[in-house]
Length: 286
Image 1 (cartoon, rainbow, N blue to C red):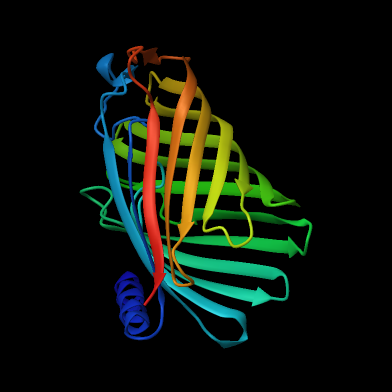
Image 2: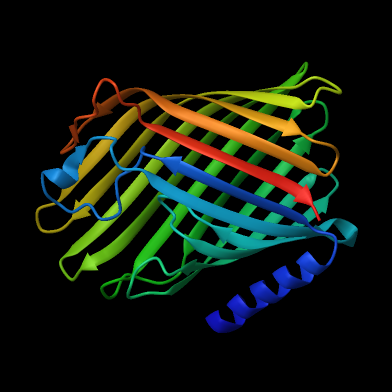
């Protein structure tokens, strides 16, 4: 089943590239998360901000008749890990529904593939705003070393204002990996964001001002459990430039304005350093 799903995703992606399709690609760098190779000791509980994590992702999508849209590609996330996905979207008047089967892709040495499902619903109130929500989950249980389980839930509400949209969102993500027969390692993140998008008619640049709060941490679940939560106040900026009707590029930067380590967290970020997340990407029609 997994082999057939992977083949189907690649087959649809190649078919879309051969026709008129929309391509998205992005790369990011961050020191805002715990390193994947940290272990349950004093060094592993210490946040220094000295480790940088690179990620690259891409997708291709195609609109069909009757409000049907396909999107397939590869995503990476510090919490939800790497995955190959194939998304079907349906637009009915102001309602959009997405169903996304995915496969976790070589996230542990012992488990190369891990199936799951994501679904979301969005409803637009013309001239007023929108509401949106969704979830994702993997299916495999934790039964042997290398197994992992991921889950996420999100909800957002947007309000249209003159020359802008104000969006409040909540995004909760977690993953748990069976590291040894006696130890499970859980990574988790919850973000509350207030995102204010500002735009003007016939002006090619859109600006987003971002403020929020984040709880991020890692828990080592064993006979003597340890938890390393980090609370952060966030601020950021996103710039999107529209280069003609078929091409756009964006850059986003989010930084922690204040950090508080609780539990077993040892916070040793130098005053001259900053916990941050930078991302840039582009979108264009082939």
